[in-house]
Image (cartoon, rainbow over all chains, first blue to last red; front, side, top):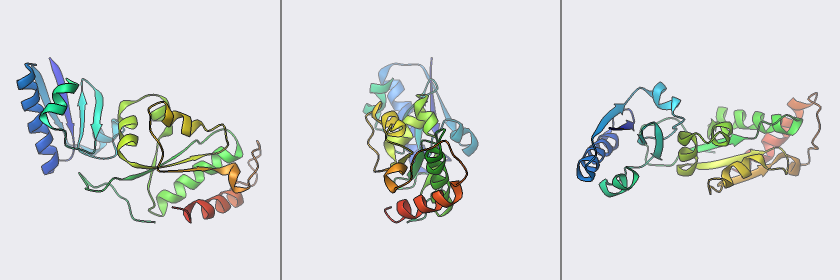
Length: 76
Length: 124
């Protein structure tokens, strides 16, 4: 199972990224757990300075942008 | 210089300031200038070591942000760390090019840091 983490304190862009990640995992046929990381201290531990960020299995893949479903599928 | 603070999903790219922070007077001057730029709101001090260590969050943040890289000397460790990931700094400075000679002498850091800060801050 893949672990997808959405790094952001919960604004509209973070929510959209989480939604896109759920769709991407479903369409790509991956079992995935999508976790929203909203604690700013935890976000900073990733070294991420701009949100939203997206991490897959602990690896940060994108920062400061809302990736599309297709873009996320390519990263899975 | 414009005010930069943590804002969730801010529409504007943040400015990150990275210094080589190396083991000479000019490395430490670079570090002092980074701290002053952060204090003055010109950008957020950020960890070049995180990029050197290939930590994904640091690398991706540097790719997404506007970046100011300050190296102490022409060895250019900061610039080279960026180049490993194909990142080009938005602005790049080398302290020795500001008329400060590299030495393992830390006795004039305050005065030399002030001089370097003046030169760099006026270019940002």
